[in-house]
Length: 111
Image 1 (spheres, helix red, strand yellow):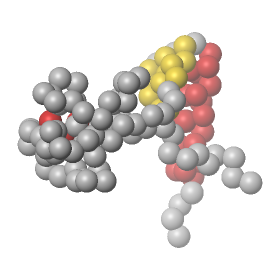
Image 2 (image 1 turned 90 degrees about the vertical axis):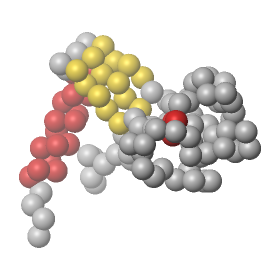
Image 3 (image 1 turned 180 degrees about the vertical axis):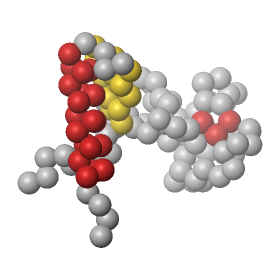
């Protein structure tokens, strides 16, 4: 049994004392709030390509500012996931988990 397997976890650990754990990518288009609004016109919350819907148009040329979707006619895709903040020993345990996974992956040489 592979005990080091995980499905797409996202981890940020700072000094093995503070950690954030969740599943969403930390990137453009993933920020959401508790209202999960589909519209933001005029732009107040989601700026430029952060207002996105990959089912309509995927990301392209992300370094160029400006909207790619028409906010008046195209809804954004809301996101929902669970994230948590860990302090102290739980953050240390999560850091150890990441270190063990990294060391295991490094020990496996491609054939």
